[in-house]
Amino acid sequence: MKKLRYSFYLPLTLFVLMTLACSKQTYTAAKNKSNDSTYTLPLAGNAFLTFKESGSSEQINNNGLANWSNENTVISSYIRVNKAGTIKLGLNAKVLPDGNSSQVKVTVNGNSKTLDLKNSEINEYPIGDFTVDTGYVKIDLQGIKKSGAYFADVTSYTITGDAVSNGVTYSNDPEFYYWARRGPSCHLAYTVPTTEKVSYYYSEIEVPQGSDPHGSYFMANGFGEGYFGFQVNSDTERRILFSVWSPYQTDDPNSIPDDHKIILNKKGPEVQTGEFGNEGSGGQSFLRYNWKAGTTYKFLLKGEPDGTGKTDYTAWFYAPEQGQWRLIASFKRPKTDKYLTNFHSFLENFNPNQGHLARTADYKNQWVRTTSGNWEKVSEAKFTVDNTYRSKQRIDAIGGKNNNGYFLKNGGFFSELVTPGTKFNFDNISQAPQIDFNSLP
Image (cartoon, rainbow, N blue to C red):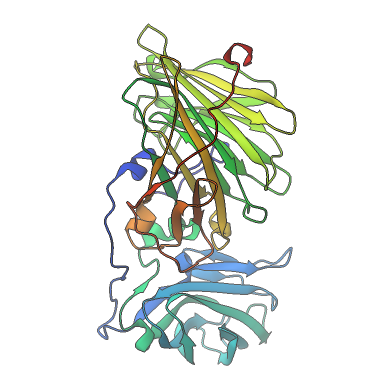
């Protein structure tokens, strides 16, 4: 698995991941030492800089913690235990150059222990015992004082004790470190309530205030050939994103033959368009729009064959602040002759440095409109997860129903579990969408 580069902050959840069957799992990582109750927790896939001052140099890389110079930086690592009890920790670290030393502290559940580091080769430093409950455990590391420029390079923790005797969950596969730090993606696969052909998908999303950290992508109207939703790119930028995959299977958009390229039919004012790659390839569009948490937004997608062996996909976004539907874009997909299929939504984080933060959203009021013009409400959704979760690298992702419809939540290392594959039914009593299709831009 290669680390991916982004085009327009491309969300990285493939629909095929959503549709794979999921069964109830036992969340236990493989033992990695001759003592079958001892585990090594690598910082590379399980640690985050949960507090870092502007200008600080610390980073988590493929070897663990590096450039650790600021005593105010907090490095938090996470592991999930299957029973309450005691864990015994050790820290694997080195201090360079030879002759330098430092003092650091490790904190679990408010209990801190101090240790002195001095070796220039990786050495295991005993930390001590901590009492923990079942679920995710946060281990905080912070510097106290140092003789040189850096506190230490830290690769991992060693963890043993009765709390891990029933197994643990953490990222123990280097191929998953990047994905585990992003966190598991989760999805809602909707049951389409009709056997007729469907030309429109409609749904709404409301993100609760404080549940929209950087890197969040809330996908509303997913379909077999693409996705449509909104994301958080920075403190000052948010986007409405609509993408369609090319039928040509490649991660390089430059290799797509001309007769397989996604064609732009039209786009709305201020919308940017281009190509994307690295997760399949195709056409992508986005509108910079400062959508707000705590507000409900509407998404409308149309998919309809053009009669020449191609299908047109068109996306509109309703901005309540402006009181109107806005066209995002319309794309023509070649080698495709079909109406809409595989209605779904998902939630993901595309910034691995933000994977320790929780994000959630209400996905509500889902409808489909048949080619005969009838609106049919969606009353069932199935919760599914991606390969990061299924591979037991990280399992802080849940979905379900609430008073508004359905919800998804991931990130933050919460301990609640929902079995992938669980179906939820919601009786939507809202009226069918009132849309004047002739006046849509």
